[in-house]
Image (cartoon, rainbow over all chains, first blue to last red; front, side):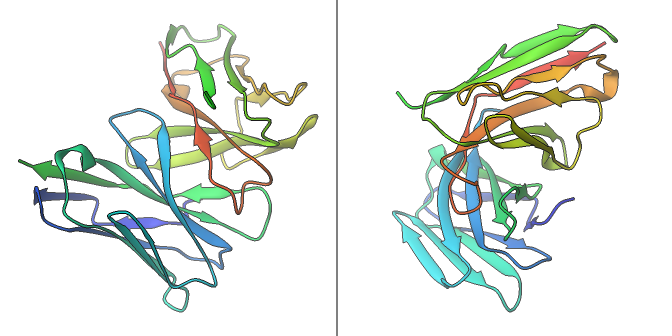
Length: 111
Length: 114
C-alpha cells in the first residue's frame, strides 16, 4: 500500500530557481523522510522530520510538515544541475516495521 | 566505509530457475528490508527483519523468501522466478526499528526474468 503521494510527478526548472515538491499521506505518522535517487541508483536519505516538528532545514533543503493536512513539502533553493534526480517522501508509522514510500517526483534542472 | 552491499548489480534469468540476491551491511544495523521498485509504483516493501531470526512480510511478499541467520546478511531468495518479478530491487538497513532512523540503501539489483 502506498502512503505518500508526491506532487508533481515531474518538474523541470531552470538552474538557480527554487524547486518545491509536495507529499500527501493518509494515516497517522511518526515521522516523514525525504530521499533522493539518481537514475536507478540506491536512494540517499536527505532529511527526517518528526510528527511534532513543523519545519526543518538542511543546507539548501527546507522541509515542512502539516499533520493536520497530512502533507509535507520539500523546497530546494538555488537549484543546481546536480539536483537532477527523483525525490521520494517516505512515512514512518507507529509500528516498528514499515517505512512506506511514495511514487516520487522527477526533478530536472535545465542549464 | 559504511555501506550496504548488494550482489549482483544485474541479473538475467529464466522462469523457474532459483536465484538469490545477497545483501550485506557493515554498520551493525538491526533492521534490514527489501524493496522492489517498478515504474509509477515507487518502492514497495517485500520483507523486513527486525533482528537475527526475526523476519516478517511486507506489502508484496508473494514469490519471495528471506532469511536472517546473521546480523549483517539478509539474502532475498526467489525459488521459482516469474516474469512479473522483473524489477529493480533494493536492500536497506537502519540502526534500530526503522521508524525513527534513516534507511541506508544498497546500489540495487536489476533483475530480468525471461
